[in-house]
Image 1 (cartoon, one colour):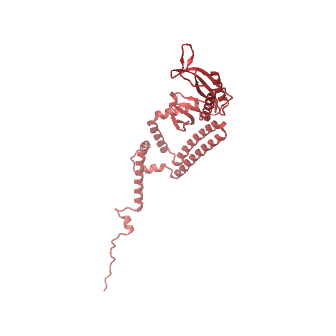
Image 2 (cartoon, rainbow, N blue to C red):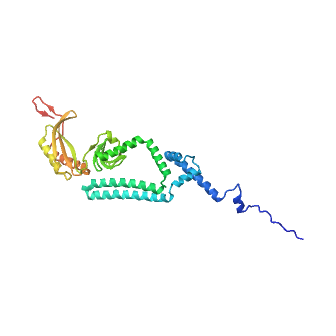
Image 3 (cartoon, rainbow, N blue to C red):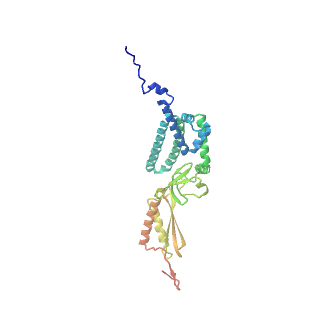
Amino acid sequence: MHASLAPLPSSKPSLRQRARAPGRRGPLTRLRAAAARLATLSLAALTLLSPALAWALDETLGAAPDAEVLSQIAGMIRWSGVATSVVVIVGSWLTIRFTRDLVERFSKQFANRRLLLHKIATIFQFIVYTSTAVVVILLSFHIDEKVLTVIGGTVAVSVGFAVKDVVASFIAGIMIMVDRPFQVGDRISFGGQYGDVTAIGLRSVRMVTLDDNVVTIPNNKFISDITSCGNYGALDMQVVMDFHIGVDQDVNAARAIVNEAAVTSRYVYLPKPVVVLVSQVIADSYVSVRLRLKAYVLDTKYEKAFETDVNLRVLGAFGERRISPPAVLHRQIGGDLQG
């Protein structure tokens, strides 16, 4: 008589038993927990990077940052459009860069249209910036009441932190575009800086100095300070140069030399007058004759080249005619001047 052997109980529970065990969690449960932890860390990072946005989300959803709130936040984002938004941003950046290179190339070929091309490029860049921002928001978010509330709260808090400077610069930028004290391409002097205006934005004005330094000036600075514009929308610009000679030198010959050096320069703009003014001035305790040249250069970018050309011509001619610079002269009893 054989006794039937009952199957020994297995020491390892089956997959179904492990899935139903109260102390164990299945793969789906662990995945949900990991997603919740990741979302919590993301919200913490968001709080550190953008307190205003986190505050707006908390006020909108009215709950602590838990899994339900985070799921609602994730529901606002259109994840399929985020990648498209990145492509749109990169495309806009490439478009603006291509436009700038194209304008620079055309400005060299059509010098008389350089200022017009820069104006068109400025307007085009502003349109691209605005359009890109609108498209990215529409693609990346589900536009509903919650999203509008979040965006409105974020903007309100951000403006509250820096309302004074931003609003002042914004209003000043509008005033600059309407009043037009200078334009893109003009050569201006402001705050000890002298150079060409390359961009006029709603927040700041960019200027490139003659030393090839880019200077950014907030728009609100132009409200109270004085700005000097050399050409005001024109390519030609007046250049003023001073030459000093002694009071005992041939003033008429020196004046003719300065005038001839200016009118024969390759950079002079002859449709406008060339004037040489003569006056006596006191410099370093002695009297000298100042010859002030006022002439127009055909393009603002040739200002320093024009000054160099005229100076070389005048100094060479003064040396040939033996016209000396100012010197201290002593008067004798007989009335003659002696150096």
